[in-house]
Length: 263
Image 1 (cartoon, rainbow, N blue to C red):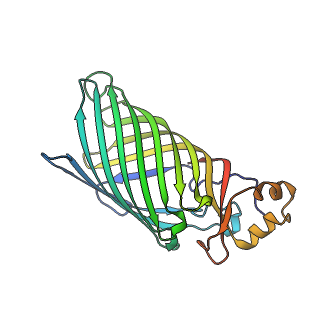
Image 2 (cartoon, helix red, strand yellow):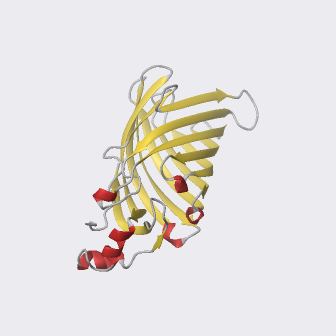
Image 3 (cartoon, helix red, strand yellow):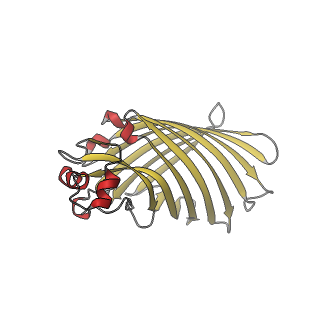
């Protein structure tokens, strides 16, 4: 049966590998000696997304392989001894093998103001950031604009180990009301530079707010029809929803609220 409005995480612990070559991910950086943009970064990844559908009914959860490719350029302007302004532009492409309606391309503009406390690589750093992203999905009702603002602090503990933590807020304004969501996020991440070319990152985050979840048509009909109990009936009948067919014929997308994801 469907549970009370809590979204299960795609993974119990969020983890990623950023490596220079291999099957899981690939990153290529090219430094430009002059011009408006000083760095070019190309990154790719392949991820198995468990419960990619964010479905609370366990037997009908859908998972998929997800591939990402992105290119980023940035410009760095030293404002004074301690303050650095970083501007970035990015174009990214996502391909979902099983559920092609979620294939998308997006473009992002970012601004980051960095305050460094002291000299050298071990000095702590605080970043204030904001970004605007436009996303176009194959399923056009999900198209929209994302605004995000955040703050983070980082400190290199050793020559190879860095610790980062922070918080952010974002709002996604979509073409269709069901996909309009706002969330807050807290995160903690550590990265270990094994060699000059290899890095491992391990982190965890808690996200609270609104999420787009999905349900099989038969299960959704039971939820809003009262067959799964009065509490579920009362809650799910207050949510924005629509038939999307994203994960199969009759599947429903709905906007949950006051939910938490631990990754």
